[in-house]
Length: 195
Image (cartoon, rainbow, N blue to C red; front, side, top):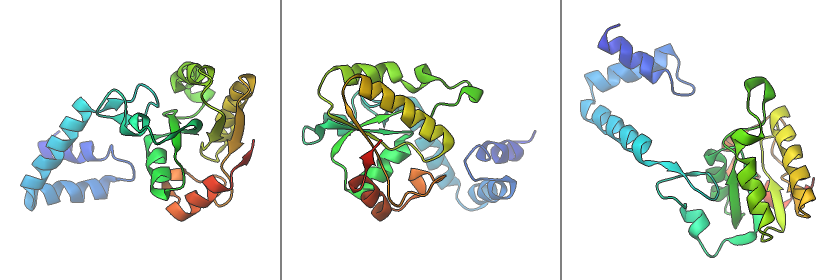
């Protein structure tokens, strides 16, 4: 495989990038923007080497505890459960939620071998056991897997006597949070219902 083919193949690992898009990007970098290519390569390398997961909420972070978990102005009694760091970003952009987060980094999927241990449920159970959380907001994606994950978590929270709500209104069934606009997400958070 030539270096150009290797670059094109490497770019195809990005979501939504097919063979033609990867080819256009590779040739753009090589023909017109080698300096930009080096910036992108350097930024990717630094991020991969220095970004890990927050010890409390599991979102992506350069520090052991992320800025959201460190913020004393966040409401510790509310815990919003999401599937990915992109969901945290989407909810933060809606500016309608001021509580804490827990990022699953996926959803239950027995067929793919993703069980409770892979999603950090043991850490979630520890957080629920501290007694600070009064409400768990289930903001998993409204897919079959997201609903199964939400149900599992709601049972876990109920066993600890924690109120459980589910985001609603405006998030389409089968949709994913990272693609929903901030106004719709704001409405969904403020109109959440018991689950």
